[in-house]
Image 1 (cartoon, one colour):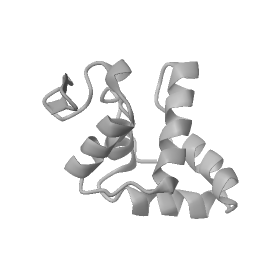
Image 2: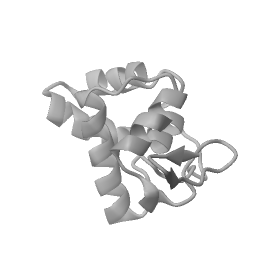
Image 3: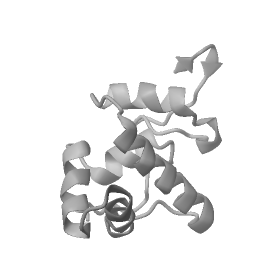
Length: 111
């Protein structure tokens, strides 16, 4: 894939091969491929996920993300989890990791 004249390497499922290639323009393009229009709510999720990934070397599972988003959005964890599933209708792990510029997780868990 080429974005702004920069060649971006994706695997067969559309995940970045080199997460360091990620930026907001890449995220917008990846989101479009998932039929998602990014709003401010999404950027808070991706910022959290990327910071978590940089600190722990793995993508956060739904529990960690729902807890943090509950704090950020001022709602309880259960409501945050429900909201995450609405924002990513084809799978929290699949869509968040892809759009946030992470490699495909080895283990799949939807939460």
